Image (cartoon, rainbow, N blue to C red; front, top):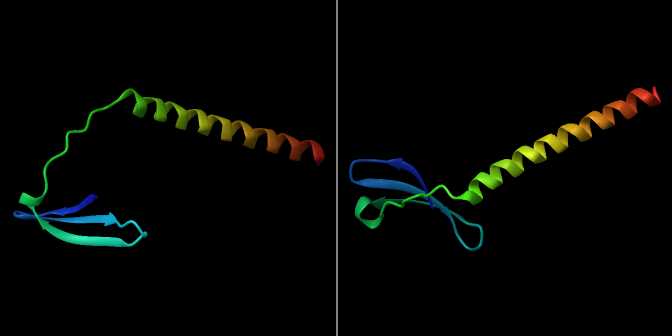
Length: 72
């Protein structure tokens, strides 16, 4: 569930149902409870993996560029 808008006494929320249907409803603040988000080591690992993937993509682009120059 994603909070789209916050008003004085209600919150507009979006979420995707089990069959892929998108829902948007305005819910009273009393229906929701705040979630505490902790930064875990997993999130840091994901960021490092994303950076590694970008580096690999860049390396592959350089190799393809060199092959094109050699062929020409």
